[in-house]
Image: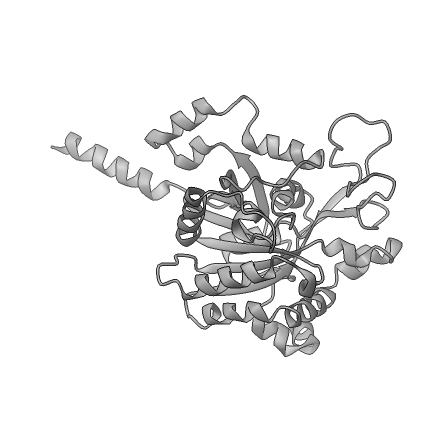
Length: 335
């Protein structure tokens, strides 16, 4: 009887030792920077280019679906269907090459292992939803079929955390604002919503500093500058007030932050936007083949903050609640 009881204890210990898993869904309009954010995550953590305290030692590695599924029956099937190049590596290559945004037909899933302070890792499923599916622009044809919309709604309601990725643009001219406002209002009122952490992350932060040259990174690193940007941006987006209904719930945390996936140029500190290349491209060594190494030019900035906040519930110096933003600069200085 002793031998029969031993496997039960071992199984129980294995279950208790299993890492925590959570799903984070990224929602935003077309070309808001969701895919670029995901592609920049490991580099941002590796370079320590986030707003968290140095005492919070973070490691982040892309993993396969099989590790996230932890031996579930579906895991081996997914691994057989994947090519030798993982979906995340394909995403990186697409972003590096200035490829097209995530297609609207089906949300894309990527998996990571996040380890804080050498503790038990958290396994993350990050879902990238195409902008035409989540927040279609007025006047554009809607290519996403009904089945894809149902899948998106199901995934969104079942997510542990939601990150709204919105671009720092003239919101009064944004043709996606109406669709985003309706989505946020419905989400705030949904009784079966699972998410307890919601982050509104504003992308393209580096664009605000393009005329400051080598002083750009110094100003971007000031949390009071980021808070000022957020206050002005929220004043232009009254439709985000629907999120206040979520913040009033005791078990829901709502945060606002800025980030820059393109980041700044190492050693020069100017925004990492090369004016000599077509489109929006990062600086790279002339004539160099392949992806620039981490030791060269690229410093993504704060790209990890919205994801780490959604995963761990830990605020960085650039993650703000409504209360902190309303309190003004003096409260930020005290904190």
